[in-house]
Length: 162
Image (cartoon, rainbow, N blue to C red; front, side, top):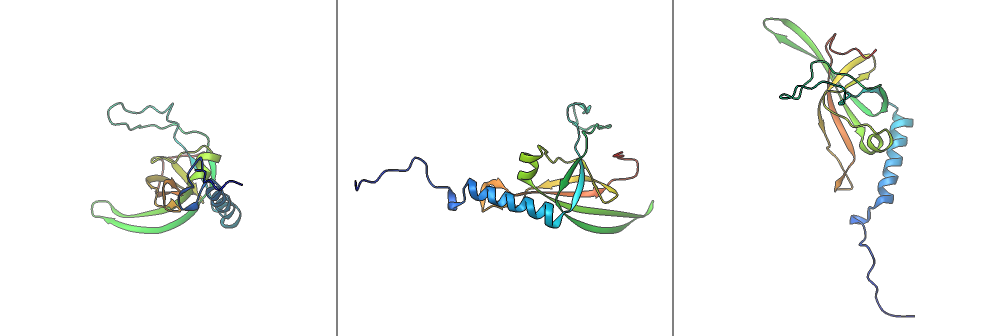
């Protein structure tokens, strides 16, 4: 038996958290979100191919949507907030925060969350106003764990998912 040292072909993964550990985290999160917590939303993605966007502003007055997709996610309801506009009167707004499991969406459902898309939570439609990716997996900057969406209730007549 030789006493010579051989350099490995590849360095070990950072912090010893490689693909196997990331896959285990994905599997556990999938099971928890779908089978234990089980909050369901219906996601209405904008069809970016057929929607007619303004060439200068990048906005669309009338949007077309792809077929809805059932998505399991963690949803926290922000409650109802009453505001007072002097010229108009009282207005009530509600909001939700949705925490999507990023790998489940992108790898398994081929779905990419965007601002301007709509979701149905309960019997109320919400529009996605802002997105963030607040968590890294095991502190690795190139592996994001979740996508958080802040959503506001859609006004009557703005969106009809049926």
